[in-house]
Length: 252
Length: 153
Image (cartoon, rainbow over all chains, first blue to last red):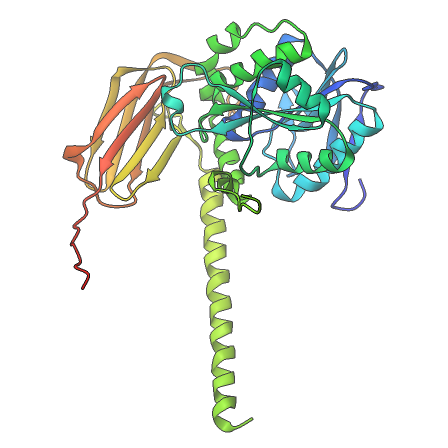
């Protein structure tokens, strides 16, 4: 690892991501991406095929069943790739990480990048089943949204790692689709994650039963409290609250 | 440059230096408090209780506190408020067991949630309202505000 602004992808296995769908699940609003990613890894029995290494990440290693692993990892199952992070992405790493992921996707001729996120809504407490909204970049992404009749986020601002990914995808002409479920901003929201998983099962054309996820919801909310707290602090530092604002309208 | 301008220039520079120092102190304190907040454990092993996640919103007339209380029934929640604090205690409907908890690496069990919140401004606890849905507790506390109408001439 040379230079402190460098992010390396270390492949543990040979990766063939041609025509694949790359899913991103980063800790954000309601930890929707984290919860949905954990569920996908478990349900699809995805295999860890690589990880990201950088001095821009905190000096942190995850120990699971006595084995160490890096916090930002790549999993795969058939033509589905998943990049998940067990830490909130530090603001300084957002641009280099986004560029790395999008370049990697381009080099490997991936089909589309799918991002899993949460949309903070003040009335979440009164919603039984959170609705999923989409932000799109590229024709393929537009087509998916049209076919599945997902409501599009038409106006507003995006802040954070997914915004940086969007910028890179737009710049590199790569299809990208953000699936954002109505969620609690500061509490882990397995219900919101279940809503996104339901849509993902149609996009990926795999059977994903959300029942086990909803059954585990209370336990997940307890186990993810610490990650939620650090994520909330990172979101505040990167100015996530700007998303609540009205964008300056150049062309009314 | 005249003597007057020179003095003004020196005072402005001194003022800028003080402003800079003040800003640096403020940033350092914010950083320290943020670190404390992140590193403070959200559990008490002796009392076997967890600290719930809390969100505090302030409007012109209310302080709205929401608390994430999974594994809790409404009847198990005890709420106590003063003019500037809110205390929450809730027994879980079942104990939550962690086989290898953090650095202690042994089995631990938690039975309840507990949290004392310092409110950002004075409230009237007698007029507070609370509701509990899907494991989220919401408490709406009216602020103690004395408003005076100002006449515009």
